[in-house]
Image (cartoon, rainbow, N blue to C red; front, side):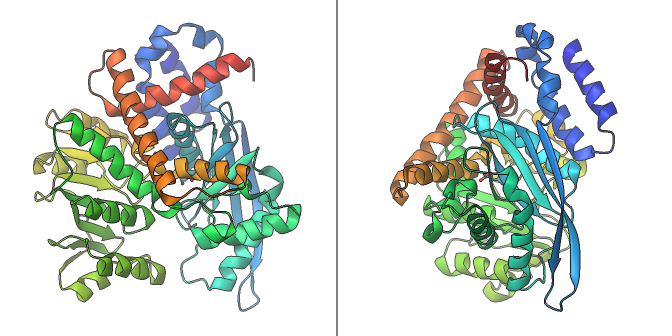
Length: 450
Ligand code: 2IT
């Protein structure tokens, strides 16, 4: 391996020994940069990689809020403002008990290269809290969001940092945070948060954008193999916002999601989640209970397999892990490889362990696509929301959709082109890492020491 990469990896490991998820993503990205680092010896003198792995700013804060029984609670809030060389920091907020500094730093690091890949002028950040929204009333969620943003507001702004949603943070939470932000700053500074409801400055199509974008990317990859999406069967994990968008767009284009899952097990619906009734049921089910997908099987008379994952099923064409990080480890990866299914498209952020990803990439019969490219439609439409806010107007759904399609095609094309250029062949994973990296590197080199 390139000596410079080796040294930075070793230093990063020594400095951040207690952050396994963060080290996982740094290792995955840096090792795939070998050809570009070899071609640019000037990067080492500029300490470029050392600067890239170190976040520009890490903010940690206390969030105190009162529950419906007047009991007070304390959670920890985070915002890791990773890299702003390309524009204002941009990236989601995650509310989940699993949130800690390692998780936020891994998400932030990934976000930098994902945001760069979109070719839109945005830097990368991520944040959130270990707050558990499950079972909390609407008033409790509102009070938490208000307390959270009362601390975070001083660090964000339409030209500074624009947070959005992630796991546990949807339109409702963004609405409460934007309301409180507006109250504090006393200005309709819409672009300080994205993923807002359309009524309060949001963009049409933002809720669907990540899932739709993933399918648009998939369409491009299928085209490369002379294939069409029509008639294809998809197995995915999760039934959240992103999975739902994939189900909807796949159905519109004549494909179907026949497997999906929740933390309680997976559903097999051979007819596919293609009707409006099924899509609406999934929305309702998630709103009521994001931990159990079993009610879908009862309602539509299909199979529910408890306490396991659908990886390894043979009667599909495409796997799309769309739930959360490290969903697919080496054992699941072996089952996936044995199934003979050709396409493995990551959708959730870092859904595959590094060992599993290496293993899958080595399978000659498979095409692997990385989440930072496949799921970039979400942040892209978030940026389009900022652009609409800056111009004080709304674009039509058709206009947003057209832009989203163009962005996804460009992400796919540039990943293919750059991997070819560096002699890596058809490598969508390395292509995305290098294309994103190159954008950030160029901006940092141009801006001098910082
Ligand atoms: O992982 C992601 O790209 C997001 N959570 C969305 C970020 C955004 O700014 O919309």
